[in-house]
Length: 479
Image (cartoon, rainbow, N blue to C red; front, side, top):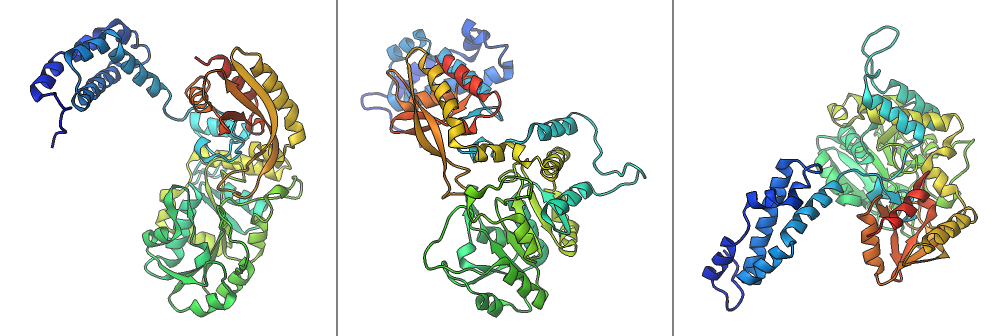
């Protein structure tokens, strides 16, 4: 049903305005649109011209434009400006390098962990040409693509074997379906039925995996007898989930991985610990002690639980991946599930993950960007913030000062953890912080910051090599 015209306007009057609209061909031939040809194909320009005309038709109907209104807008170049704007927005879409000045090290919206330059180079080499993937070099026979990765994961975590899939959600799905698919029971504490970003809810995933959820305990307290009483001949999996993005404090109790693993062995039921982020600490790296009680991968493996799941692109600091380590028997079961083929890593992810783990094992874990940015102290960041404030303050219309503040490892990774830092508080004369932030996000290079007390805060903690200069350039390029 069509929406009514504005009071005083008739359908016939609207039709007269519609007839005065410029044609598609007329707009395509306009010099300003023709000048966009190097930036957009004719097909794309045609799409944008038609969309602009459709948008104008909707406004005529909704706002009751007169012929004079239309002609005034045409004369002012509004049509041409909208087409130019659509082209500009198209150029800003997709996966584009940005400057992260938010202070959130593992920023989901900005791609989480930036990988080490050597890992990035390994990924680029794998992508740009042929590579050894599913063939053994000496014999020339086909092998498993992740044999070497499994060895690296074993050395790094102490597990017997390991595999990787495309993210930790896929790892959860694979474990559930392998061990309890077909309607078998998955026993989990009520306090661990989490929801993570993107509405990934554990009960919903269990339903999709074809398993039966058995909740034990309460939201804040679950005890060993709760699990033991729930075990039956229908049990397929004992599941423990780290509540990575929230905390229950006060009168609480939970069952540890060691106890859950022992219960599983007693009843011959597989056990699984989903760590979420997963903190891998090796003896020759500086501990990320600021993360407090974040569960350690090696401790989880040593607990005796059958399989441990964690992310590759969070605290590990590698490319996106879901890592599964544990006993060889259980990992082999996962590998044989046809779903594994659907969610396994491609050659690019494998190459980056292999190099990341090699860095850990060679004593270079602290070079990995995400670890390095968490380990840097506020005292080290202060002179960087002061120099940034000096350079920005020298630009016309920009005022900048330094203040103490807090960074975050990642709001979902460690929600209650903050890192002392120094930030630059930047303002632009005659412009709100929201407008300035938008100009920076849509500028060149794109910059993401945070807003506090109507001022833009720029945190040097998350500036990578070359980002300081790119940030200053972005301010210089402001319209």
